[in-house]
Image 1 (cartoon, rainbow, N blue to C red):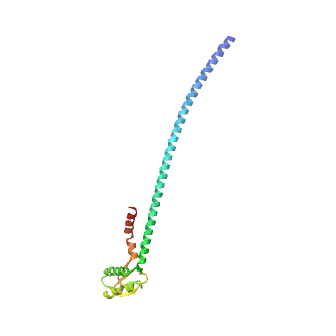
Image 2 (spheres, rainbow, N blue to C red):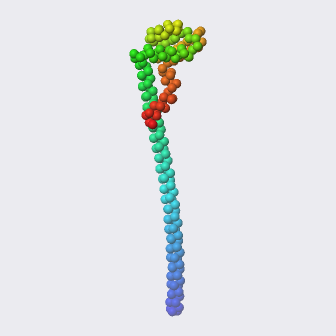
Image 3 (tube, helix red, strand yellow):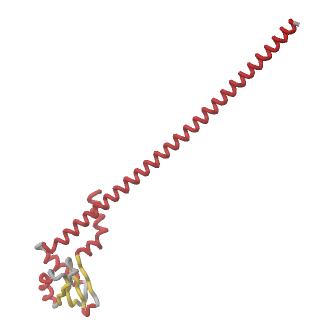
Length: 188
């Protein structure tokens, strides 16, 4: 029996070795397959992360550009507001200028020209001495209006029609066009 035992032992050993070889081959195939799948998943995940990163960078750049554009727009608005404030300041200083009587007369003539039959001129009490000559020439009454420091109001017969010609209101009406020109000069 010992020979039989040895043969059986060899056959069992050979069978064990064959099963082991087959198991090792299957394990190697599974490992290779798993490695390929893992590399594929890793590569896909890396591409997805890279795409997400690029999208985040584009969003951040867009947000940054928007913030910059907003800041520039706000800064330009502030500059234009400062320019307007300086113009208003210069207009408010005109009554102290030696040219003020001529400016006031021109404002009055423009307002009177817009009325068919004027009967009176109104302006700030400080302005009335500058308008006396024009009022006499045209046979107009002069009326004091403390609110009209920088302009005049021509009043038609019976007081039904009035035309106001004041520097600050003219600036307000013209500001959109003027601010465009100022912006063009400042920023091209």
